[in-house]
Image (cartoon, rainbow, N blue to C red; front, side):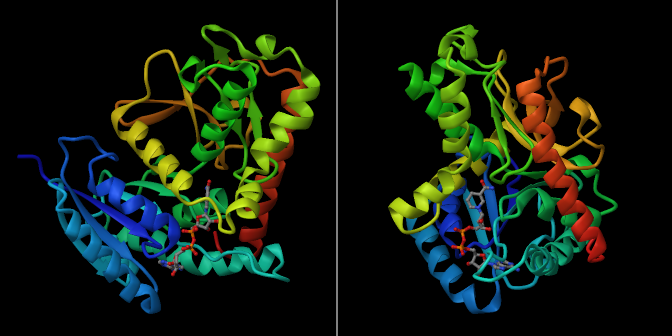
Length: 328
Ligand code: NAI
């Protein structure tokens, strides 16, 4: 029998947590042959709610679920963790400046980075979902000097999946016909969904669309502002789709991306495509043998260059801000 994989989930009692945990426990994260043990981290006042979710997980009698432990202490929650999904974060509230937001999140992601450094398993893989995700990942990474930097990633897979769906809708094809789409930069309004290298049924997608106005004025803003549109319609932020994207990200990271395609993930830059080394930025990526690799050699035209640079500039500003606050 396989040894269970320890999956730590923070913000477990939140709405993404609720959509995520059942899918992990059912085997959708790591496949049907891999048992999991859940380690849930919450703040003290939400531990009770996490216990309620754990009762429901018990009630599913998932064959692959080998245990659930609930903590309010990051040191304990990350002990032995093989996969860590950092979902809990401090949201921006009315009147909060960027500096306040970064500082509040520093108070969460610094101790979590330290706890990962101290106690996680050697093969630890970290996905940060909680916003501002790229910079929260940078903060956690900075406090885990013994963990290889590339093990800290941030989620742009929801943006990627949204872009695939929008493009398929425009072209009147199934999502399975779309490949090689890319989200570049920050998981924020500046992100750039790039269809210039994307393919639809093997042909170039930008040529198939052949409509720069749609690309500029509809597609890019629709993808970038989709989160706000969901809030407006649903009265609550994206949760099941965010959980789904987190599952996609980790599953592809561990099990590999399909041949002939790539996906998008925010990973530490090695300087590729002019993105300053060390920033955690979204790239076109494949996963081979459990490691993300940036797809190389794509030609970037002026339209794309301008947009990638703008989003990467924002990432640099966020990094400078957390540096100035002493958080990294
Ligand atoms: P939520 O507010 O429903 O849940 C967040 C949970 O985190 C709460 O239960 C809270 O008690 C917990 N939490 C707060 N601080 C914590 C800490 N220090 N340790 C452990 N748990 C802590 O929020 P929701 O909807 O689940 O979203 C979570 C995060 O995901 C937000 O930051 C949101 O902006 C982000 N998000 C990111 C997306 C992406 O594409 N990267 C997409 C959608 C949401």
